[in-house]
Amino acid sequence: MRILVCNDDGISARGLRALVEVAQEFGQVFVVAPDKPQSGMGHAISIGVPLRLYPSSIFGSSIPAWACSGTPADCVKLATGVLGLRPDLLLSGINHGANFSISVFYSGTLSAAIEGAFEGIPSVGFSLLNYSMEADFSAAQAIVREVLLMYLAHPFPPHVPLNVNIPDLPLSEIRGLRLTRQARGRFIEQFEKRIDPYGEPYYWMVGRFESQDTASDTDIWALEKGYVSICPLLIDLTNHSFLQHWEAVQR
Amino acid sequence: MRILVCNDDGISARGLRALVEVAQEFGQVFVVAPDKPQSGMGHAISIGVPLRLYPSSIFGSSIPAWACSGTPADCVKLATGVLGLRPDLLLSGINHGANFSISVFYSGTLSAAIEGAFEGIPSVGFSLLNYSMEADFSAAQAIVREVLLMYLAHPFPPHVPLNVNIPDLPLSEIRGLRLTRQARGRFIEQFEKRIDPYGEPYYWMVGRFESQDTASDTDIWALEKGYVSICPLLIDLTNHSFLQHWEAVQR
Image (tube, rainbow over all chains, first blue to last red; front, side, top):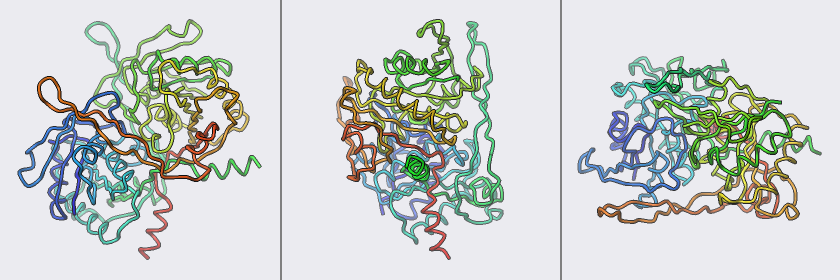
């Protein structure tokens, strides 16, 4: 099995290395990852900008790797379009930080998995609920292994990327895997205003997330209770139920 | 009615001015737009980077406007979080170019509308099927007016952003408005390799879109037949039908 591993924290991130180590147990691994952190890049692609792709020996001689000057979505496009890699599986992460609720839209980690799903490649994004660049990924590695064994034992229809979030707990305290839906929530937009040395204002985004959903089938609920959250995603953004509603109204 | 107008082509784009002109007929307009083109930025936000917000007189004294150093999604966050604008309606565009099928994921124009929907603000993204910065928006302005009259006459539930694509035709040749769904399709990933003056390779993305959907209820079908496509979007990316399928399998 050929496995493409991507991320959004950049090629030198510990979370990427942790994912590569587990992926190796399942097949031949290739890495194409951004040459710098790309958190919050959403599904951005580089339009009107040439892209660079540098071979890297960071994972040793048995794991071909490339650093890319673009976004996570660019990495997947370059892997297929320039390197000619057609993976059987695409793994993204392990992200340093959570990707639940509407964070899915902002996440570079998930954009790589969604980009894989566009191509019909089974794709999974992994995130650990710890934002530190020095986070301990040992429990997360055991979870990635468990999720992949389950995923590969129950082949999925293509075009369904999975969003896997892992609580930041010792393995013995993780209660198991849960299928979830994206919780409703929002970011309270707050900005800290500062004045630069030239007297001009600038703003740091310091918003915080607010859940608007207390049900027990959501990603947030599962993570708060110590479960791993596995949420299948869509690549068709049509609001079909609203379409039906509107068509009924118009008749 | 307070109307926030955003875009992704930047504050000086003709499409933004065309949208502002029509929006003025419906209420008090405020503009917060990127200070440079942000096409293809998807739902990127600026993390770890301070943001600038410059007042602009580009639309005259009756229309307050700000140029923002960040992405389209940042513009919406700054409008609410720094400027304290709580619009009754958010309009994004008019984009110079199409946003159909999976382009929704890559689109900066729609990220602003989706960001508005996160906040429960009725939000519409408009795109004209002409990529030229010198495109003629006169027919598109008449369509924006028609869509807004319909939209305001039939109040929608919040959290449903609309994706409106307008064919690049004279008004007399536009056949009307159609409710659509996102067509299935993909980008054929192709890159043009060049060598820089220092002997190093770089790559231009030159992929092309391929429709995988011939049904007559899609955005692509409507546009090819000369209709305006109106596609309601989701902000819950959970694949609910897959969740049900998987839960049934596991029992």
